[in-house]
Length: 92
Image (tube, rainbow, N blue to C red; front, side, top):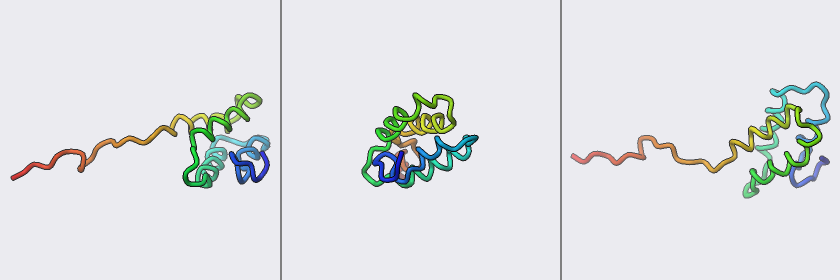
């Protein structure tokens, strides 16, 4: 909404919803700006859920709604996928 909002400190998400004709690419760029601005230690998943609850009901087909939902789907805790250090080394 406005600058200083704890969920959207720069107001970029709220502004994206007010831009006529904005596309998904621009929304992804705005989302990246927002994500990089989230203070360390803040719960990104909770913020995304709150932003979706705030904006999606009135804007279900807006590209920013789709981007926020995609961000929420990817906000799960990272898991180790393996790699060269995940396997025990053979001993000679």
